[in-house]
Image (cartoon, rainbow, N blue to C red; front, side, top):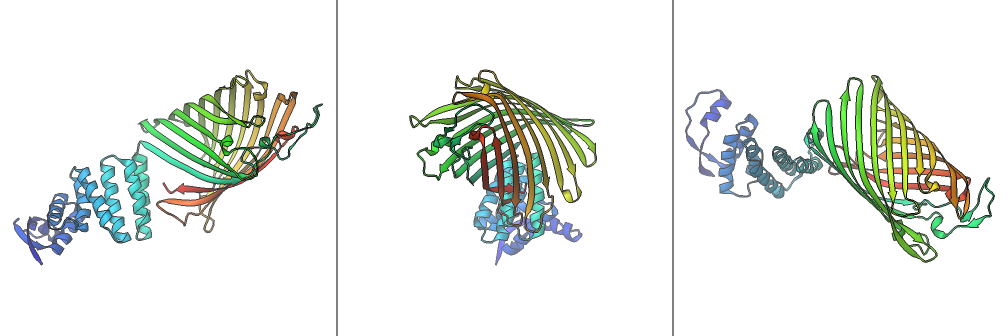
Length: 461
């Protein structure tokens, strides 16, 4: 069917055919107008594409192809809002994966032109889910990573449900015994013994880039983590006894130097939790406030080897007068090797010195040796990273049930992260985090075996 669109298109046709033609109005069929609009987009003639798109929409407001043309052309001509609206309408009208892919990419482009980079990333996730082939998927991933780099906001959500045989960090046995301490053996209350159950964690981390140059970057961040639990053992302890919340505000500055990178960090946070009183079967609200200062320094030792040094100072203020102020100093060194195939191995040594200013139970020294290895490429259908280590903690004067003496804990731990990169939905792939730890102590209250398996989601960008 012919329709009198009256578009001045001969100059554009002459450009396509390299033939000199005078500009004049011609009548186009709807199909010819759609084809010409696509050709105009491909040739960068966005004004003509918009004119064609607008006239097609005047004939049929639900013309999906015309809406796609406007989604691309409008942002190029300075009207990103109109491009966004057209792209959203085109996506809603799409009935196949291929057409949804085109519409989602169009709205992502319009959002990026409006400097709404987070929204653009969300639309690219939608496009990624409908990518018609591997080439389209690779292009969408590349675009998403480019938008992420431009975005001053960086936000991530964490949600997990983890079954564990020890969700409260309880002792392996209900008998309280002492080695090398002259004290009678006692019994532990049920809340001090390991409890099985499920732990749910929700976390939000968002960071805003205040400034960035070729050799420096400053950002401010906000973090919130909520932990909830479901106790599956038959005990009288309420689930709320294992509730906790943590919120933190931080400031970070990274500076590139001639021989590496130096980072300065400062943070203020608050952590609240519950104390269960078994004798009265009540819960008490507890919390501490935290101030943290840290410096990280990375030195390249060779093309594939780097050394990282960390110095951190923390001050904790507990609401409970029986605990009060705790000062901690943490020193850490990490050696990192980049291996063939994008594999990477790390080895770190950490020293923690804690001073319980008002409570000796919070005075201890801890040494941790830890190693890790990650495979850069999938091993068959899975991605894999492992880590493990040893920790020695010494408390020179620990008091428990009016018995005082030196406490010494020795822990071994192991972790494994398994991903399934071939299974993807909106740019996220599932996986599992497996963690195990065994602690031996001269005070049985702190001897524990912990094993947990958690479901994870990882983002491709």
